[in-house]
Image (cartoon, rainbow, N blue to C red; front, side, top):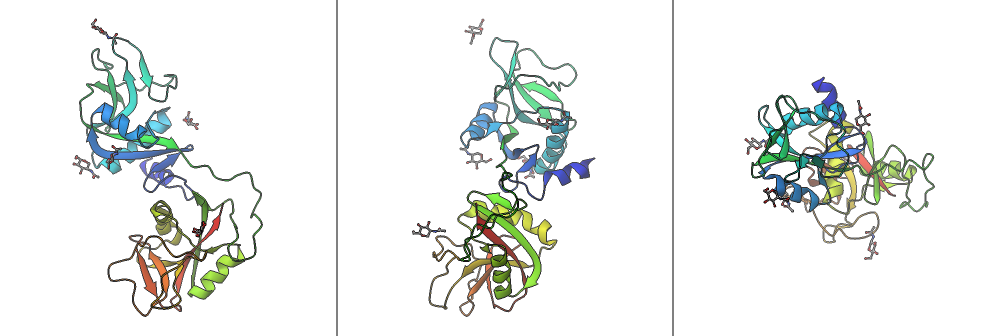
Length: 290
Ligand SMILES: *[C@@H]1O[C@H](CO)[C@@H](O)[C@H](O)[C@H]1NC(C)=O
Ligand SMILES: *[C@@H]1O[C@H](CO)[C@@H](O)[C@H](O)[C@H]1NC(C)=O
Ligand SMILES: *[C@@H]1O[C@H](CO)[C@@H](O)[C@H](O)[C@H]1NC(C)=O
Ligand SMILES: *[C@@H]1O[C@H](CO)[C@@H](O)[C@H](O)[C@H]1NC(C)=O
Ligand SMILES: *[C@@H]1O[C@H](CO)[C@@H](O)[C@H](O)[C@H]1NC(C)=O
């Protein structure tokens, strides 16, 4: 049961931010920073998320089993987005959804204790006082796949086409696909261009972390790197992306770039960039524009 749930937690084409878990189109973010209920709630809402609702037993078990992993505890509890307004007997979800699923532990709720936490041991709910400091879970809607297109979109044919496919991982304006063949940088670039893409372009660290979070399972490897679209024309000129733009940020592994190398690959293990000689045989990631 636990294994099955953990597998679900990392769907190949998830569209949550790095390290968050997706089920049924919602992403769950596990925050191990012990906070009062109000602080937990504010931390979620300040980023456009909500202190999570638990909508049925499937979700309760899914979230509960990941919480045990992420919080590293089997005892204790974590805040969920349920509380009782003062002097009222009614509990309310933070997202205002009707309270149509209950998971109270025996004897709960207690009167005078208005804030709800789920137990790590059995996912059941208990009531506590607001200042109690607990880890908590925020949730947000998964970024939607583009399911309206049939197959690959047309490409612009200039090596910087959109080339996005249904099975790609999408984040912000880019789609990403993984190439498990070990190729030289030239062959890797050509194989991206064949599908209307370029070697991967990253606009920010969200995209870097997002792609990295899938690289290990996609490539079934840890101690190697994949080609990305960053390169330079000579040792004395800046690195640029296939768009022609110089990179606005860098993510080098300590000691890199090597002065005599022009092509960049990203390490699977830690997301950092290293330079390689062009004939190095590596995996690759391609990207297109959504
Ligand atoms: C939310 O909590 C995280 C730690 O869990 C912290 O790094 C971040 O700064 C907090 N954000 C806000 C807006 O409180
Ligand atoms: C639990 O809730 C999710 C999200 O609404 C839904 O997709 C799923 O079918 C529900 N599962 C059960 C067993 O009710
Ligand atoms: C979560 O926080 C608790 C208490 O601060 C700590 O004991 C535990 O090691 C943390 N777990 C992880 C996985 O960081
Ligand atoms: C709750 O009840 C107390 C005591 O009866 C009262 O003083 C307080 O104003 C009430 N609060 C609200 C929000 O109604
Ligand atoms: C490249 O730079 C130009 C000019 O600053 C900008 O308009 C364009 O959006 C950039 N392209 C990419 C892909 O970042």
